[in-house]
Image (cartoon, rainbow, N blue to C red; front, side, top):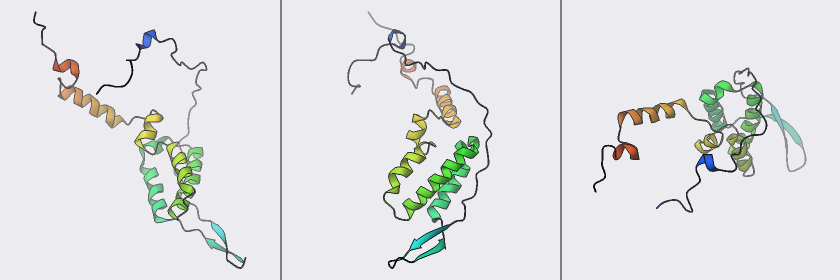
Length: 158
């Protein structure tokens, strides 16, 4: 079944092209290394109101998540500021894996800003080079793979 509604106008006939009215600013970045998950202490309050400090223990899932970001091709361009934001996100990730259901929406929003899922990367217009190479190989290896190629060489009969 085809899409709903009329076909879109050709791009050259559209009245509105949504071009940016402000030129972008190009800056040189200074990528930085991923920091380690920090050691810190939290204060617990018991039922009687007494407080005690204890060392925060990062959940194993958060440690794996942090290591995954270190191996991500996206991390090659992360600046010190990016790692700082991702470190804050790691704390939200830890809260989520420690059973805090209120942390899930915040974790989703924060991780999306870094391109965590294929949908997030599509929204951020991030494409992995392997995908481009695979598309090119597919076009070269199967000349009749697209619609025009399938009908190439056919002639209309009167």
